[in-house]
Length: 267
Image (cartoon, rainbow, N blue to C red; front, side, top):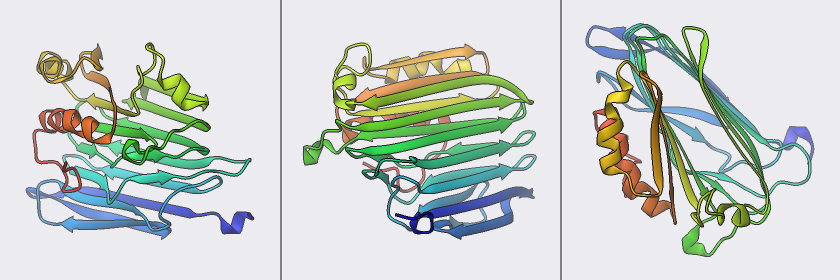
C-alpha cells in the first residue's frame, strides 16, 4: 500500500469565553478527521472528534489539537470507539493529541475506547500544556480485542505516551508499551491479572489530591490511584471487558468532572 492510500486526518479548534458561554474562535479540519458540535451556548463548548475512515491501520496518521483560552471550557469526546486494525509490516498507525489550557480554563478529554485487534500497530501520544490554575481531565481507555466476540490479541505493537506540562515544566509523564503476545503479558499478575480492558485517568487541577479518598471508596480492587503532586491525580483501572470497565469508570468520571458526561458515555 502506497503512502497516498493511507488515511490522514487533522483537526484543530480554539475556544474562547463570551460572557457565561464558551464559544468557537477557530476551527480547521482536513482528510478523515472531522469535528462536530452537538451543543451550543452552554458554559462548556462540546465537541465530538470523528474518524470518517472507520478505523486506523499501519501508516495512518491522525492529529487533533484543541485550545481553551483564558476562562473558557471545552468538553471533547469521540463519536464511537476507535478501531486499530491489523497492520502490515512497516510503520504503525499514529495518533497525536495536543491539549492547551490557558489561565483558568478547563478541558475534559473523554474519548471512547480504543479497540486493539490482533496484529495491530499503534503509536499514540497525548500532550497536555496548561497553566497552574487551569483544569484538565483526561481519560484514555483500551480494549484488547472484544471479549464478547472471543477475540484474543496475540500480536501487538503498541506505544502510549502521556506528557503533562504545567507552566512549561514537565510535571507528569506516563509510558505504556506492549509488544508481541499481549494476551500473555496481560495475564501476568503484575500487569493486568488477565484483564482485557484498561483505563488511565489524569486530573491536573488545583486541589486534585482532595479526590483521593472519595475515589478509593469508588474503585474496585483492580484499580489504583495516587497523587504524585497536590495538583495531579492519576489512576489506572483494569477490567475483564469493556462493559465492566465502563461500569466502574463512569462514576469516577462523573465525580472528577462534576458534570454530566458526553452523551456517548452510556452503558
